[in-house]
Image (cartoon, helix red, strand yellow):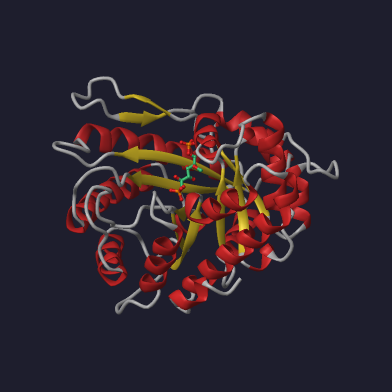
Length: 341
Ligand code: 5MM
């Protein structure tokens, strides 16, 4: 029988009261897009400087339990020459690693849908990451809402790879974050987002069960049921009600934590929606927290602007956003807290 004690310990850490996760695992094309949008050159040293700035932010460990990194960051060092994963652990933040290798076309789909790849050689890669200090992993699937999408084929095929990933990760004693991202692109309403989340999550948890993934030793990172980009946002209470409906219908109570992705919501929207979720009526058997990338990092990148001398104000922006999300994780956030740095 597998010794699950290390995974249990990791889960305890990732669900620590008042804390959530930071996703800083952007692939090269994604980080390039984010930095270029702010006029910052996407050089290897800029990426290193920026991610080292995040990890070494004073006080952020009070609100952030773990950071998800991209492979490149696992091999980089802080300005003081400390390997970034070690610097992270030394500050009481658990390092995690994105292990999917992005999406590719799903053959046979009439709608140009995607499937996530990266299962080949995964177990061997995990051994290396574990030696570098990573204790949890992340794999992201994407589903687009449209006419005829996501198709049954895309839902089933993606669920299968996500479950195989999670099973491999647990087999080496690491905790898998399972991320089925339903995209915000489109003109759908919250009801449709909720329906799609439900059907996607149902397939994912069926596949996880089929592959004997232990639900107590994983973390779910889903999308909230938000309206499509092309229409007006719903209120936080509406988002919370629809999101919780899809989760209650599909996610076993045995799953310890649901840490949401932000999916293109503004930082304050993502915080307000999380807060509403933690104040909503009805049962919530899981910890409901955050694993945001853009909704935490946008103000940090804005403050940094690619200038070394802005390091400290960028770090302040990071702590501020992390603190607000920590409050939302406990249902204590109010918009007037946005103003207090
Ligand atoms: C940071 O973005 C992550 C990696 O995406 P790519 O491989 O496409 O670069 C992504 O998985 C991220 O963790 C989630 O989408 C959550 O990020 P947001 O910005 O939605 O909170």
